[in-house]
Image (cartoon, rainbow, N blue to C red; front, side):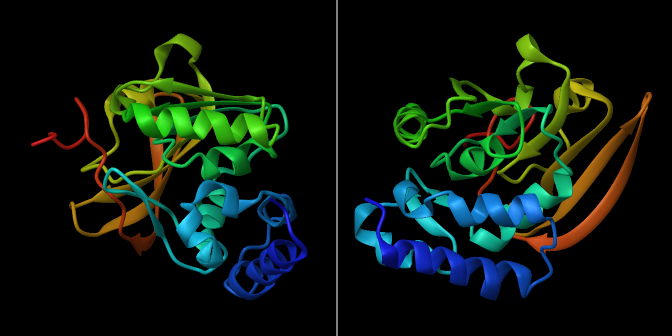
Length: 217
């Protein structure tokens, strides 16, 4: 349920967490100020939904802190006509933010329960340009490639090669890459057969499991 308290909490989140820490993209700020993050967290954690912290969503997964969601979205430099591939649907919150800024979102999730839950909430809030697909996100989603932007919300040892091949010319890929404990947020931009790397800030994400990620064991 939407309440005045939730609306005020979102406004504080935008001003005190996002703008204060350097998020300047107005579209991102507006999306973050409109998407009901409390709908994507466990009912017992609703009071913490707009705190600047990740929260558990079950299955050893988390919903990222709002600042990281905003930063990764800003790095994508989304355009209204973009087609986006998201790897790691999780709660569905990141996909909901993307849905307010781009034309079509394909989101891949490996855990059936999370995929089902995300589909339900996304439908309830009217994010009908998001399609959640169950599968191994480390191999991407060849069926709808190429993608204008790709966002990976789990940590990989490096950029999975299938994701590079599925990125459109001039496209941008944002991913946390490094060890299983800590990583750096990276942005890769495709320039023909070459990829330009920008390394941003240290982060800590759950591991990307799969054929081109970390082994499940």
